[in-house]
Image (cartoon, rainbow, N blue to C red; front, side, top):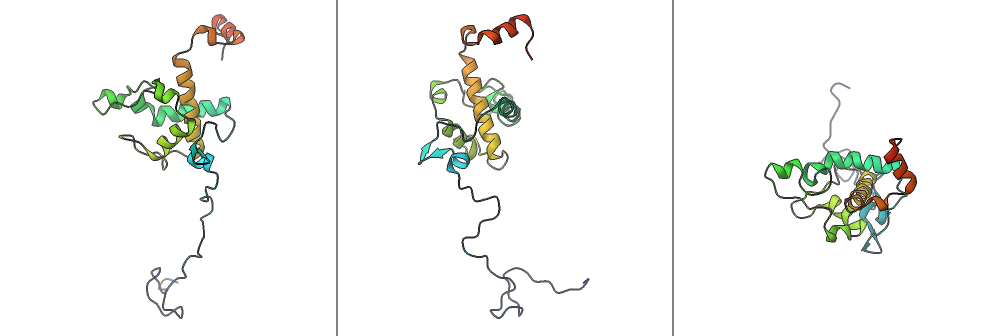
Length: 170
């Protein structure tokens, strides 16, 4: 075994009758886990249009995970509150988009997912760094940031307001 013959893939050899050292992949083969048939989940689109709904129900745990991932990947440029004034921007790099402008506040969820996945302008793509489910969780957290930016005390449910005023919150 120490000195066994070694073949380079698809280089010539006398092992197979056609002179190849390996067999070609079967046409139409998709690696396990890479089919990506669900376009809503993987592309943020429904019937070719940007989605306005999430591909799975968003829970409190999803929002917490979205916040964690946002703070790691997004806040360096967009800032912790989504104003577009993160530390990278404060150090002289191009200003990032604020999530609180009308254009992004009214953008479909699929648009935010698409930009995160494929990049846009000076923003690079994050499809290799952030798994699909986490990108959706970040989108959910961005929506939460957008809602809180223009919220007033009247928007807080009464039972939650009691928790805030009495200090019995989480």
